[in-house]
Image (cartoon, rainbow, N blue to C red; front, side):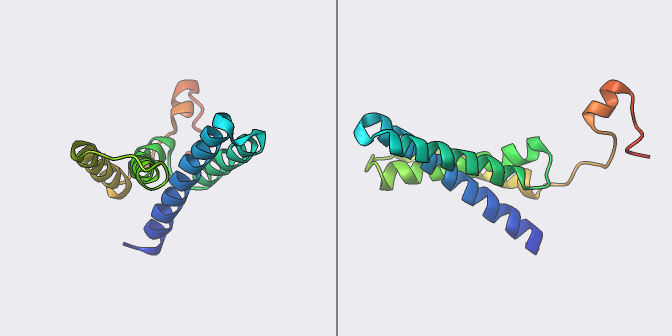
Length: 128
């Protein structure tokens, strides 16, 4: 794994933590914790959006690779924060999702060519 891939994986893991953490804060805020937790949850969720956007990957690759991290982080929060018991089939399913996510992240990069919006409009001035 080269440094760029390591950074991408770290950013995706951090983003998953922020998204799930923001969801947890909002959940706790709406269930008696108060408007302060809800507001903090909104801020944390916004931070997640900015962090994922900083990656210079196409949107489908970012979201495809990210889903594995999100699924794993969600289960870990459920288990560690909410003290929920996670059954074995759920762990197996998340493992499958995580493997798929890694395939998307480390699979071959798409060939360089016109972007979708250039194909729709016929404007290829940026690709020449």
